[in-house]
Structure formats: structure tokens, C-alpha cells
Length: 262
Image (cartoon, rainbow, N blue to C red):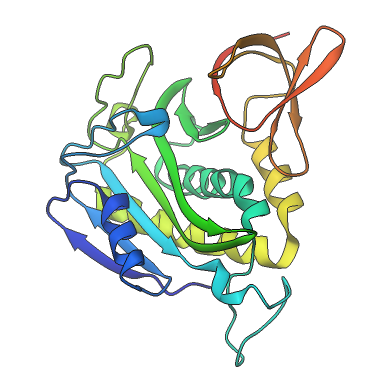
């Protein structure tokens, strides 16, 4: 398992930007950065992610390219290393989503079950509680470095235009943000190990058990068009499968709105 080197700060502009700068300077994998507050947090598709005091702003640095010559079960000097290529990048938000959902399950009341929404949201009772952001630099099929940014509404639920949001405190959870962040790191490390030993299939099958069910009505928005249909699962590499009339459409990216199961 990864032994995270956790650094804690009272305020940063963006934990992901901070990790990226450290990566460019040669920081080894395993860095985890937690900020009690962000002043310029980033969300998906260019949005701002608001992260006031009391919420989780956490980013981690991975360098899977350092083990590119190893097999998925390989070892280097007896020390396990991450080994995956750019073709696996679409699995990473799914893996991180499962880890966050599992961590939230440990702090939420028994009647609250976190639900995953493709590709990078975690919901509580249909409202967004957490989000993920993946930054990576790659050359051909090799990844130089990868940063997973994780934002969780713990004490507060900032308003987001067009989205219903919530926080852990609204559901009776009083766990401090740092403790939630540490739980996420534990589960993230465990799921990275699972990825190395079992590959993408285990991540995808687990994600599906924690997500909106097959048959859920979806609206998918991309830069090119908007499509409506029903959720038909995920491809072997993590793309969204949408049943549209008598055909299956595949999406590598996009924003989805959930409807009801048909």
C-alpha cells in the first residue's frame, strides 16, 4: 500500500495546482496535500470548486510511469510500485470515486448510502456532496505524473448553479474534515492495490454496484451535442454506455443529469 506523505496547510489556492507544481519539481509519488481552505479550487469542465473552512480539499500525487517496465503484478527491488499506462486513465476517476464513497460510508449514518454518478461525482440522497478532478501529463502511452483532486462538503454545502448540493453535516455527521481526508487516503491506497492485482474489471464492477442503476434515465451533455437515453453500464475501459432508442452510444467525457429508472 502507498505510504502517503500527508502535508497539511491552513490555506492554499488549489491543492491540485500545488501538487502539480511539486510534481514538475520532481516530487516522488505518494505526496498527499490537505488544505483547510482553498481560495481558487478547480472543479470539472473549468468550474470553480468552492472549499470553505470545514470541508475537505485533498490532492494526491502518483507517478505510475516509474513502473512502466513492470507487469501489473511486478515488483522493483521487492517494493510494490504502481504500474498503469495512459490507456488506464479513464479508470482513475472511477477508482477514486469508489474510494471516496467507501470512506463516506464509514462516517455517514447507516441510513445514508453514498451514490456515484459518472464520471466524477459522489451524491448523498441525490445531491452532490463530493467531486473529483484528474490532472495528468503523459508522453505517448506513458504517464509522467498524475494528480487526483478530491473535494468533499463536510461542514458546508456551497451553492452550485444548476446543481443540488449537500454536506455531511446536513446528514448528522460530525467527523472533522481532516479525519474524513485520512479515511479517503486509506481507501484510495487499498483500491490502488486492488487495481494493480485485479485490473480495471474489479474497479468497474464495484463502481456499478455503487452507482445509479442500469436503466436510469440520463441526459448526457458534451461540447458537441446533448443525448437522452438510459444508462446501459460501462465499457471495459470505463466509458459511459447510453441506450438511445435501438443503439448504444459510448461517451468518454460529458456531463450527465440523472432522471428516474425506467
